[in-house]
Figure 1 (cartoon, helix red, strand yellow):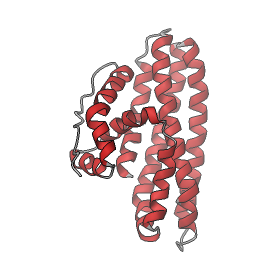
Figure 2 (cartoon, one colour):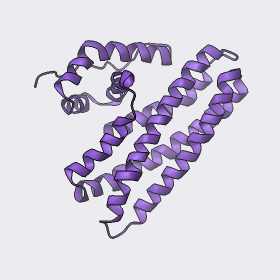
Figure 3 (tube, helix red, strand yellow):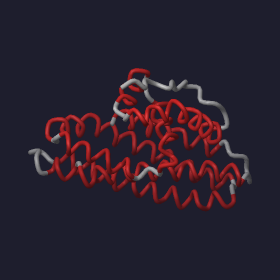
Figure 4 (cartoon, helix red, strand yellow):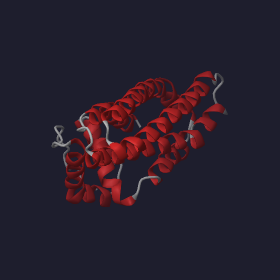
Length: 218
């Protein structure tokens, strides 16, 4: 999960700069970035839904001190509020692409990135060790399945690319190895090119962090 967290950290941190880079009145470019923002916030929402439905209830029933878990639930609520605010601002910005609307959106996204980083820090320091001790393999797998089910099939390889882009070489090897052979072959044959095209479309330049095709052996 740390690998996925790093992807969220990197992409949300980049959003304010992306918004500021849009020329005043360029609605086409604004639409591209707002679509990406919407996809990111949707992915984060369902990542949190998975934790709300399959992680926090289990931990609350098995740990003695629940204060940290309750605090992280509250963090989800705050992040959700910032997402809702950002999406409302993004809708208005998409229509006009005016810099003043973009500035307000970028400010909200900066606050969202800060709140998200604080939350992920707590998850990695507290929640993940607790999950390792208190959840069964099947219970932990369910957390991942809920989040994964929210990704449209035609975007899975692209999303995989963004995850691998934020990972270290060792993390990429590990993450790809957890996927079925068919998925690894699809990434090698199609995914990397699809990701690179999407990255260029969103960021306006090629990816600087080379993402290898990874292992495909059984």
